[in-house]
Amino acid sequence: MKVSSWSRPILFGFGLFFLATTALAQVRASRNMELVANVALGGQNALNAVLLDQHPDRPFAYAIGASGFHVVSTDGGERLSSVRLDSGDWADLATFPVENRVFAAAVGSGGLRVWDVTDPANPEDVRNLGSEAAGRALFAYRAADGRRLLFVAGNGVAVHDLSNLVSGSRPDARVLSLPDAVPGEIRDVFVAWHDGSETERVYIAGRGGYAVLDLATGETMALVNDAAVQLGTSISATPDGTHLVTTANYRTAPVRIYDIRPVLDGTISQVRTPVGAWTADWRHHAERQTVRWPFFFVAAQDDGLHVVNMRNAFEPYTEGFFRTWDGPVSKPGEPYNGARDVDVRNHDGLIAVADAHSGLYLIRMEGFQGWDGRGWGLPNVGHVQDWENGPVGQSRW
Image (cartoon, rainbow, N blue to C red):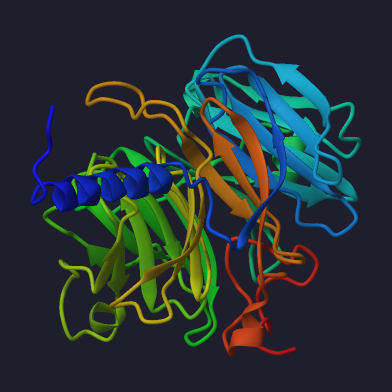
């Protein structure tokens, strides 16, 4: 076939466009991201959650899903041990120390289980509460008064005393009172000390949106009722307690950032619109996130890990990415593929990602060598607990 001279530039342009888009689709990671290790842990739909041990002398990662509970060395990427789980969809993890022992707890439809992981190669079964203790998320917290608490989000929020939980004593869980605007099904819970008001706040995500509660009084301090969010999936607060970073459980939902100061100071009764939003791809949604200001780290399902800079909450932007999943994108109605959970080790900046199918990823981002809020002029509070000293005084070096 003869091609006219005027059409050659057009065809050439289409060729360049095709090559450029194909090359772009094959880019797995931004230049500032380095893969440390990838550990296959069970194959298809095997992982739901990951957690890094935060103690400098314990270089371990914990991961869980339908196939089991796993302990992995972050030094070499070897799997140190696994515990087979025969039933239940296990959704989340928490770790905590009690009397010089280290424990890991898991929650899911099968209930609440606790292992002694002081020796990571030989986890010991400590507690197995049945389906009456089922839930979706866990958060282990060292309170200002010294109490060590485990928050379980599910049909409400239950609070366990960690010492009793691991000692075999009768469970003494109390249930938090929830606001009418966020009833029943709770998908995530986060607890943090607020340095400015010297209060401890419970942040919840669930049906109806998001809420902030006073741990001591149970009072509802703030509500976020965004008409676009029927079911909140995850929630974090910035170290100064002024902004919330959230995800929602539907396709095309972005990560939303809410400024809650106007409701905390009484200017408005509740927050209804975000001040900023971010998405890796508008056709997809993010599952979970964790904040290390000015960054939040996102397990963005089919789009993998993304690190987002939120120094300006109105205009968050991608700082780096690593695509853990390179298979087909899930279709509407199918289980989501890709990155389901993410955690960050504060003392050295190691990033861990749980991919539903391709396993555990250990990743480093150039220039990010650890996090301490005080280095940013903020309180050093967040997902990582100071189990020895508690949260009070963490605004000073």
